[in-house]
Image (cartoon, rainbow, N blue to C red; front, side, top):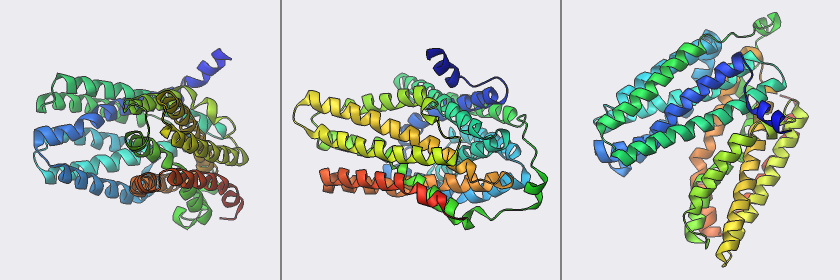
Length: 400
């Protein structure tokens, strides 16, 4: 069983392994950029917190709006070609970011990086859709997610070392040149990925546009709702620990570590059953239940005894991560099963755009529920997760 588990984690030779290398390199660059960019803007460039926050909000909106034309472009020009150009432009953007000297240049580059990184996320899904069939699609995506998390963790460590040395323009430039070089290698590798030929019927019979496919849009929104788990992890739990829990603030770092390790080790194992629509629906249902139970455990961390509070937080973190893994696998499977091969870019872009919605509304919603509602807020979140998990069955069963 251990050997099988290790084998499942390891991408097979050929295209799965090539895609894993691409994901690892992209993630390492993103990991270096993440923890250092805001500090660079504040300490070196001299931008205010308000300027940085507004700039990142504009960039987030740009990434959301650009997803639809990017997906359409991938269907017209070829997904590997668009991904190659995206990696190349991302490399140039990282280099330019190190030379940022004012708020306008920062906003433009932040928009470019957000658009390109967001596009590469759903284009990777379109590429997998065109390279593989059936349950292999979700297995490869699960393996790539584990690899991506490993790359981000390693890149973040490199960024943290840079912060410890003393972040200045020179150090940041070295980091960005390294990240740019990795994106350039990704560009050279992705254009060599061979795609399956579309069947004649797929080429001649154009399906409905993704935005007009009501079943697909609804299931994308339901899946996006379950991704509020990420907001709970990054926003809700830190707020709860500081305001209500008797556990020490250090527990937030422990929980993030638990999440990273569990995703790395168990994403593939918990993706079993995602090779059919019925199996994916079950995964989404179980994801909703696991996320609801995590809300209960996290709420109980407000007990007065610190040891019990820590135990509740650990249990909640594990349940939250298990729900996240089940939801990811179920969402991937449903998105691939309902995506026509001739419109993979367009459909995956819609699915990716829906996943961006929790980032817009989630922080304010979760913060309000947990600060104003406290235990009632956790209860409402639990009910919401259960409802979103159960609603997948009637949506998938309906006609497009």
